Length: 280
Picture 1 (cartoon, rainbow, N blue to C red):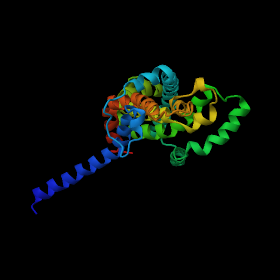
Picture 2 (cartoon, rainbow, N blue to C red; picture 1 turned 180 degrees about the vertical axis):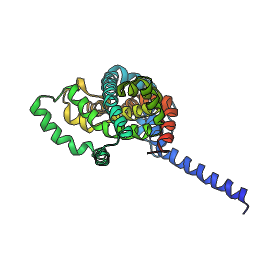
Picture 3 (cartoon, rainbow, N blue to C red; picture 1 turned 120 degrees about the horizontal axis):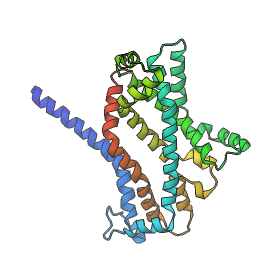
Picture 4 (cartoon, helix red, strand yellow; picture 1 turned 135 degrees about the vertical axis):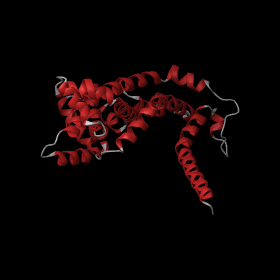
C-alpha cells in the first residue's frame, strides 16, 4: 500500500470515528425532539417511528402556556448568571496567583484544588441539607448559589490557571513598568487578553449550573423557586395522564439556551483548550 493510500485510509478511519461519536451524542437529542412532535398514539407504536406523520407543534405551545416552563427557565437563568459572575470573581484572581507567583505550598494547593474538583455533589448533598437547615438557608437562592459557586470554583481555577500559563510574563512586566499595580495588571491587562479562556470557563459553568439536579433537589422545596432541572421532574409528576410528549417538548426547550450559547462560543472554547494544552 502506498503512503498516499495509507494516509487516505487513516483519514477515513478518523472521520468514521468522528461520525460514530457524533451519532452517539446526537441521537438522544434527536429522539427527544422526535418524541416531542408525536401524538399519544404514535408514542406507543411498535416498531416505533422515527418521525411523526403530522408533527404536533402544539405540544410546545401547550407546555409554554400551561406548565410554567418559562418560569423555571427564568429561575435557572438568574441562578446561572449570578453563579458565573461570582465564580469568575474568585477563580480568576486565584488562577492568576497560581500562575504568576511561586510560593512554598503551591504544589499542595494545586493538588487540593484537583481533589476538590473530583468531589461529586452527591457526596456533599446530605451534609449540606443538615447545615443549611440549621442556619435557615433551605429554599433560599443565596444558599443554592453559594453551593454552585463552591462546586464550580476548583474547575474554573484549574482551567484558567492553565490558560494564564500560556500568556507571556512580558505582559505583566510591561504593565508594572507603566505603573500598574498587580491588581490593575490582573483586571486591565490580562483579563482582556484572557477572554477566550474566560469565555470557555463561562460556558462550562453555565452548562454545569443549568443542568445541576442533586443540589437544588436537596435544598429547595418551594416549586416557585425550582430551576429547569427540577421543573422537568415536576412536569413528569404533575399529571396522571400520558405526558411523555409534553415532557420531551419541555426538555427540548430546556436544552435550547445551552445549545445556543455553546454554538456561539465554541470558537472560544476550542481556542482556549488548544492554548491551554501548550503549557500547563
